[in-house]
Image (cartoon, rainbow, N blue to C red; front, top):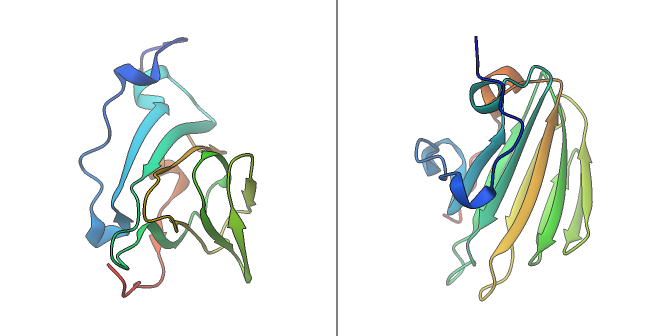
Length: 143
């Protein structure tokens, strides 16, 4: 059984070093804040993502993907970028809240060459990335 942990500090959580650009996690750091593994969550995952600045046309992004088992909500805390959800594309910045239904293709990208973009995400209905399902859909060419 997973531990039941009710409190932690973001500063104490290390970014997940297993996430690879080859799998669509490009120039970004993900911290898993609430999952089955670290707090005993059964029905949601909460994380923080830092997207590094885009440098010389090389994006910092989470490539096009979907989650068959979870809805996702992304809240941008700082920085600017773009989001694609389904057939919609829109600019995002501080205060932007993006809702992505299950199975919907989506991506998030930092478009600034000087500032990192930071966001918090919630995957509802799944206790971790494996439970949410992760299906990379399209290869981006600007890495």
